[in-house]
Amino acid sequence: MTTPVQEPQGMSTEREEPDWLIRQRQNSKELWGERLVLPEWQDEQDFRAKNGWQGRDLIHDVDSPVRITEYYVRYGNGQGLPKLSHHHNQQEGAESTVTETTATDGGLCRGGVGTQLTGIVQFTPRAESHRGYCHGGSMCSVLDDVIGWCGFVVTGQFLPWSGFTVQINTSLQKPIAVGTTLLVRARVTDIERRKVSIAAEIVAPAIASRIIDNYDDRIGDREGKEQQEDETIFASGTGLVVLNKGVLPAFATTGSFHKWPSSVAMT
Image (cartoon, rainbow, N blue to C red):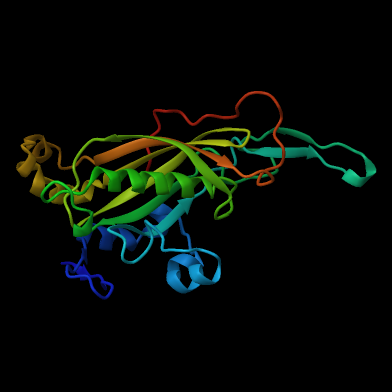
């Protein structure tokens, strides 16, 4: 059973939501967290035109060849973010001291290291490169997008355009067939002053493994049938986001803060 998705005018191919997505949507808050809502995603053309943009969003536009339709955030517990241990009126000449935040400290008590963003991404036939498969650049663009937006929620608040991505490194691990709907995830792994390190991946959840198996045969990979209960990773990457000045209280001048263990999987 599938649920048709409304296509924008001019699209010749109808997309449908896969069964696994329909089921996971029913528990979206438990699985993925709070849904992010942004006016430019809801009424993109009108909002962007009135607020200084000159074009349409590469990834979130309804006509995008590869489109992230929505994002959900599960905030961390504030690790890696600064707190003010004491604060006095700056006009009186007193100084504020910034110290490291832990899970039990006060201050910025959510966000930080461990904050995770999950998106639903549709790869349409217009992203095609090799026959039947999407262009690798579309996969890189999706990773770039999720890394950037994950940086915008690191403070524990949704602050669009509060920083900029300065570096991404990607690994394309498995081709994506046109017409496929997948998940994209990103997690904050480290914070050093204004620099936010983020890991990301494009995946099919375990319950979607039968979809993967349909085109494993086409590329000569028979192992998929033996691993149908495992999550399938199509691409992964890391990135660095630099927050704008003033987004966070000034950091202390020493070192980086908490790091998320590299062995912890995104869930």
